[in-house]
Length: 459
Image: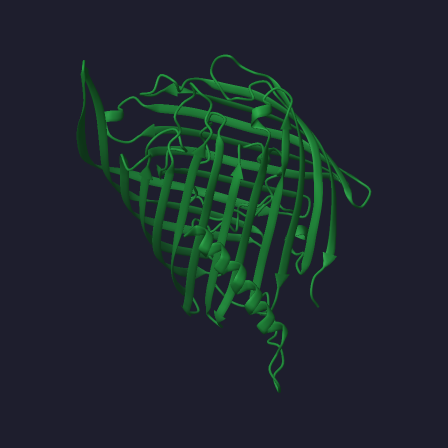
């Protein structure tokens, strides 16, 4: 389903772009909407528009094809992400990429591919290729109606993210974002995140909208003796109404339904959430948003117990249905300046268990800052903290705390080359019903050199 959404996104971008590039006889191309018009932006709590660490001049670049290749080396003192028997490993990667970005009077679309291959010095059985395909399409259906489609497909063991600097546009906002906080043992991970949003501004100060999100994650080739990771599927739909009280202040109400399916159908959670939100557009490229409301969860858990009385082995199945009322709240801030960009997201919500737990009540803080020190030098810092408590009476006391952070420097060398140095630290601890999940921590050091190019695309 998600791959079909992505294919439709790419197809729609090419068809619509071609249609706009070739006006009909007697017609002229529709001029772009003026910056000072009164069109309503998408809600910051639902879309990923405020989550980028790009500088404002980088946001204004469009109608380009970009590409390049990155080669690098990484040392990880706990490459297998295990509590005991830590293995330090040095790996080498080669990662090509290509990105397309085009803007027309009614259409903006982006499509990017990051791929490559990683060779490990000690964990040679983990030598593998990585693939990351992502795209965003925004189309103005009518003068007051917009459609936004986005998708991100990832196939990796987690090593690919070491070379990404966090400036890509997220697929969703903080309310719909999959759980990014938990640290999993080394395993092959195939996941897809897709979203679709429609909005209609029916008056100068009033907007309605609806949309849906899809997230699917599968784990393969897990090392023997490690924690059994849980495949995860999450689907959600939402509808909202926003009203503008002043030129820069929007207040809205959102209803959201989500369904989390964890494992082989043994843990299913449905949530109903009503959120009151307020968004302040402080100035261009600076957004502050808050949301809060009740969240009602329906938790269905199936527990299978083996009874072994030789020579007979029998299984007992116990189903448990529970209901829970909790509070969901949070906020986000995003700013893309000329030389400084920053983002911060704080949230409390029901979320998926990141492949380690069932549905959880997640308290998280995530943020980053990027600063240009000189014309060719920039530094960046990203950090994340999450407290995950599994829902349901059968999982009382099951909770994990995790924290991770990365700091690095980017140095341009000439017009097409860049040197990056990064240091990362990850830490996780807590108690679970599985004795195989315990404290995990490791340190990473990364050095990479990349070649990149930019070429105009289209007219």
